[in-house]
Image 1 (cartoon, rainbow over the protein chains, first blue to last red):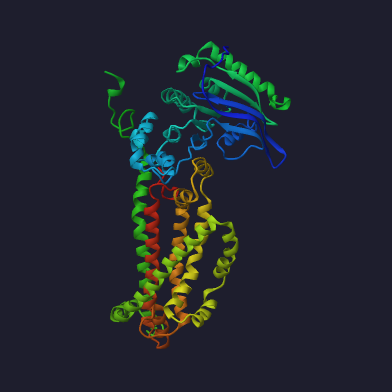
Image 2 (image 1 turned 120 degrees about the vertical axis):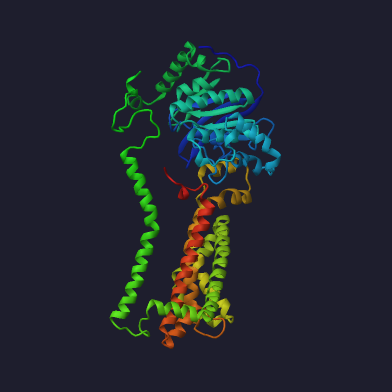
Length: 262
Length: 292
């Protein structure tokens, strides 16, 4: 396992000692700190209830932290987000093109002025021929691609992904993982990725934050220096196995004894 | 030379010979075709039989036309009195159409207001419910006392009956937008107006159209009931008044003719609203989805 500094990247976002408590008693997240730098691919990995989705919602500005601060470099930032949920979350009444157009439309831009860009991102995810299709005509994997295209379309500073491939079958999931990395290489996007799959997180990220539940917290950060682009070579590399093993051990070590026995 | 090339007499299904239909699939296809034909044939046949039986019933029992006219007599009355009846039909249609229009505007408008302001919803929804649950026949006489114009009175009655399903359904629809989509709109900093136009109204469309189908029928019922209550005749009275009038004069065939026109109007309104719903939803909504 190689652990090394990730070079000089300019910071985008700082999360400082953030707590989130619900109803005054349920501690969803305790003392979480996270620095996101330009070009990072960060995974939040943990069992359900570890606060990983809560962390993502805090970053997205969907709710405020109870204690602590989330600071965007240069002040603004929340306008400049792309989000991919576990569900494709497309508007069923709109064509693929109109769905990708949504973030532009909400900024007051006309379809004509951004049509080229929309078709460009659709080509990036391999769906340029489906611009006029309706979501229901697409497969689950294709819908997820549209969702990714929408998140990429505006070239946001940060893309948040909340278990985006969890509902897909294993083959589609691996294909989309490969495609996601090649998209990242092409666009230089910065990604914070929530997952409960050890292998997915080791394959995709250059940093993994391993989280534990009750209360939700980060228990360990693992850096992965394997160079991008990563593909089948990385999936079968010995280091990949070593890191996956270590990640998995850390996760299981943090589970309560009765849970680990299950 | 392979084994597959040796042909046998019986046309047993072989791999590679496309297209292949097995017996089960053929049976299904046959059943689908039959059902397609039966869908039209059966209702028409049964309806014709019922009318024939009506006719025979009158003849066999020598029933007088002022008690139960034969279907042929109703039809000839319809043609003979077409001048009067069509004028009345037009009046009823106008009231129904206008009431439905106002119900759509009022119902959707109120629903949007409710969705924008919980305060408005809490203030006004009790009125909407009270108007809905009070039978229109019991409010109508009061309305005709307070409202001078007969037309406005009729409209008001028809509207009261028709607007509630549109209001209730649209209110529900505006609230039922997908949670993740709502979060997405928040993240993209959509303002209230954008949220309404691009998220809530499209989400509410299927619900609204369901309400419209019900409201169409109710508007007609409201118009007819109101006219019964209003009761005054003369020029510009609708089909309901023609029925009352024919009843007083024992012109039973004419009563039937007017009744048939009202029923037909109802059917046409239902068909029209169904068609609108189909056209608006066929591209994306589950209800219009054809399963293979």
